[in-house]
Each structure stands twice: as C-alpha cells, then as structure tokens.
Amino acid sequence: MQLDNSVLRQQFAQVFSPGGRVRIVRAPGRVNLIGEHTDYNDGFVFPMAIEPEVRIACRLREDGLVRFSSTMFPGEITEFSIEGDIDKAPLGHWSNYPRGVAASLRNSGLPLVGMDALLTNSLPGGGGLSSSAAVEVATAQAFLTLAGHNVEPMRLALLCQKAEHEYAGVPCGIMDQMIVATARVGHAMLFDCRAFLRKPIPLPSEDVRVVIANTMVRHDLTGADGKSEYAKRREQCQAGVQYFRQFNPDIKSLRDVSIEMIEQATGKLDELILRRCRHVVSETARCQEAADQLVARNFEQFGKLMCQSHVSLRDDYQVSCEELDFMAEQAMQVSGVYGARMTGGGFGGCIVAVCKPSAVDALIDHLKTTYKNSKYGIDPVVFSTSATGGAGLME
Ligand code: GLA
Image (cartoon, rainbow, N blue to C red; front, side):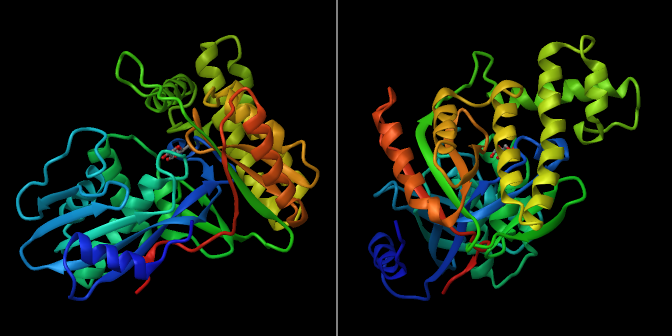
C-alpha cells in the first residue's frame, strides 16, 4: 500500500481541525538480513530499512498538550500533557509509544512541545518488521521537528529504545531503532552493537533483490511466569555469560565467547544454555562473514549463511515456528533464490529471502500459492522491497 500525504493532510484536518502549519515525518520498517538475537549480546546485526513505513502529520500546540491519533484506530485520540509526569497507559496500549517517546526526550533534557499528531501506517503491526520502532522514531522526529531541534540519529535511536523498554515494557536490543533512524538508501547496515559502529554496504538491485513474506501468524508466548520468550532468551544468554566468566573474568557478553569455548563447554554447561550460546556465537560470526560475502558480490555464499542462520534459530535458539520453517523451505525451492530465513524476534512474523532479480515474480507467486494451499490455508502478504533511507522530515 502506498501512503499519500495529501490524503493524510485531509484526514488530519478531519480528526483535529484545518489550518496551521502541518508537517509530515516518516520512519521506515526494517528487515534483518542476518544477525538475529545478537544485538543484546554485543554482537553484529545486518538489517536494512524497507519501503512500508509510518508517517505522522503533526502541528504545534501552544498549550503543552499532546493529542495523538492513528488511522488504525479511528475515533480514538490519546491525550497527555508534557508538563508533569507522563503517565503510562495500560500495558499493550499503542499510546505508550508516543507517551514513552515524549518522556524519553524530556528526561534527556531535549526541548519538548505539545502537538496534534495523526499517524498512518503501511507497515503491518506485530508482523516482525519493527512497526513499534518506526512509530517511536517517527514520533520523536515529529516532536523534534516542531521544536525546531535536531538530534544525531544514533542518539535518537537510543532514546527510542529507552521508550520501548520503559513504556512498552519490551526489553529489546538496539537493532530496530538503530536501522530505522540511520538507514541509508540502497544499503544494508552492518552494525557492531558493542562498538556502536555502522558500516553501510550496498545492495545492488541489478544483482540482488529482497523479498519478504509474512506468515500472518504471531504466537504469543508469554509464559505463566509473565515472562516473554524474548526475555527468557536474554536471561539464558546471561546464564551462559556467567558460566564462561568462571574461566575468564574479562568475558562481559557472548561476544567475548569463541566457537572453541562453546565446544569445550559441551557436556559441562547445561544443554539448553549451551544451545542458546552456540546460536549467538555462531550467528555473530555468520553475520560478519555474510557482510564480507556481500561486499565480494558472492551472493551464493551470502544465501547459504542465511539458510544456516535459520537452522540455528530453529534448532538451537528455538525461536522459529512451523509456519516460518515452511515458508523458508518453500522459498529455497524456487530457482534463483540465494537464501531465506526467519527474520526478527521469531515465533511468527516474516521470512526474508534474497534472490536474483529474475526470480522475484516466481518467488512471490510460489510463496503465496504454496502457503495458501498448505494446511495453514492463510493468504500471506509477500512483497519485494528496495533498501530505503532512515527516518526524516518529508514536508
Ligand atoms: C526484536 C528486537 C531486536 C532484536 C530482534 C532479534 O526485533 O527488537 O532488538 O533483538 O528481535 O534479533
């Protein structure tokens, strides 16, 4: 779906009122090509920004009120004041994103203004393409634009991650906000989550294309203990770090653990923790190698690493699900496809495939038909996308 700014302006005038200077900001979704569940382990990730995105039309208010609405929830306006404490809405309510971002900007000493804001979205919520990071970064852009202030994109990413931790209650890593805020057109971004170093790597569209397929399922795996599977994985990684620290107190995260150390721990470290660590350590290595292979235009090898990543996420990290496995396997049946894997946090959401330009149509067709005709019987959303730029002011 293409978003249209003139339609957004009309909707804004209907929800709020006509007149005044209305600005429009945007923030893209993202897909991660490889390097999954490595960001919170100080490892490497390799995402790119995608065409589906979030846009916000916004207008300054002089009374310190924020009135925020979304075309996804017509008739609903969330309202809060930027003067006093910014209350949280009940956990899971969408307004925690604007609330969290406002609180995060203010608490870090940035100028904050009131605004009317209407959000619109071509990014499926909960689809594993980082709609929440896009909403956060677009909201931050809206506030900063109206305050006439500029913040370095990486700092913006950190402020938005804080909003996600504190208001949305999700202990995410930095990948999503980082790529949404800093992406470069036509490039994927190799990011070292320890050194905070970014390396844009071109994705030449004449050689290689990216296709995303949404399984349309999301298995909500919050356990009886109230902990999400994501939070559990983080704890398991921490348990691994504790184990390896016995041998070397300089080990701060799984980034400091080598494959040899994992091999030596076999039979000694708890089997489940060992598998989690093996995924993270091998994935960090795969991610760096994949970026090198892309630079060398060795797409076959890049694709193989993507497939290995999927297997590791499925068997060792155990964050895939049968729908994702099915889609990733089906993608590999199409000639001209280099590699395919689940992408994002897992337990549903999307797969990403990398293929020759000539294979795009056949791949999209094959995934749509086989998934629909499978026991899942669902119409998936499948599309190809170029690598877009990071969040910013449109008009
Ligand atoms: C989610 C998180 C990211 C990252 C991925 C897994 O998308 O928001 O920080 O941990 O899962 O790679």
